Image (cartoon, each protein chain N blue to C red):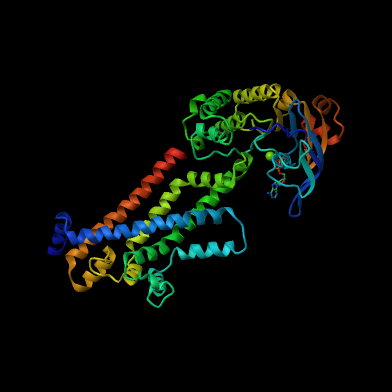
Length: 240
Length: 230
Ligand SMILES: Nc1ncnc2c1ncn2[C@@H]1O[C@H](COP(=O)(O)OP(=O)(O)OP(=O)(O)O)[C@@H](O)[C@H]1O
Ligand SMILES: [Mg+2]
């Protein structure tokens, strides 16, 4: 039985994360609610990946608290994450996708159908029987996306899902994200591509050196950034 | 070389003494590997996936034990199993069972250490994904062992190679009793010193063939797995 509790809204209360002396996230408070995709932007090393890992429960805050739908533990099976560097199991593409479904209560036939459907969505139906580790970086990223999508999560965390993709595949992934968002899946996605952020974002979180400098509706972020750093980031200038 | 000619004759004619010795050797070493797998695989996996005080020391010890001198293991097992030893009441000394015990002690460190290394490397790679997929601890172990199965087969073959080729432990705890605990290696040692070269050389040839086959198998498994699993 799937429990009906939701992991949204996902809240950070004054979350700080340190690795030894370095502060990677600095007193971040935020709320992620159902709705259009939330895009996480910021320079390299600003803490985007770290923020997503905290959302996934893969790291624990040094200080502060995270809550999922009001609870301090996430409910299993409701969140999926696509990592910046995709992890391919030493198995075929099909088995990699099926592995993501192994803990669902679906019968085997339904799992196979979902696997095929997910591979079609990412445009890789012909690679099902290939060893996953032998695929190109971009193909692996799409397999990982298929594995995440097949689980039909409530919340999907995407860490730069198009960073290694060619223009056609990038457009395909953006379409997938749009359709998933329309079907009610909440997307939180890190991206360096401002054009992509404009195309997809409902709201934008802007990180600089571990601090959340802005969290605003996309239109406001681009047209009326409230910090000088965000203004120069939007213009495409260097933010240090 | 009249000796090598008669060695071939022994092999080809299916000499009963020779093949009884080969059979016993294989049975002892295979049993030792099976026991070592039953102990070594879980031990290696636990060491790879848990953190506790003294873990590093245990890993260093285990890696060191991979090169344990067989005679020392033989001596230790001899003292344990001898009539006045702590396990003397089972009367196992100078039986094939004693040889199996001694050889599995030689092979356990090899299998445990190689399992630990393989599983730990793979865990570093898989960790985030398996945690994100909410895989239970038992499921993680199963996945990691399954995905490193080709490396583990190589470890297993290495363990078997060590067991089949060693002479020190089986000589000491088996006693080299004719028709009962005489293995390929102990027979070669004995017959060579007695000057009966055909039997020693026949067994030597078979032993070399077995070791070559094991290495060929390990090689084949590796190549095949690289093609298949990447
Ligand atoms: N395990 C760790 N130990 C020490 N420092 C870490 C660790 N993980 C991340 N960091 C540091 O935290 C900072 C933020 O890293 P993070 O990966 O979140 O950045 P990012 O915004 O995703 O960058 P990019 O755009 O390059 O993907 C970096 O300076 C990084 O070196
Ligand atoms: Mg990152």
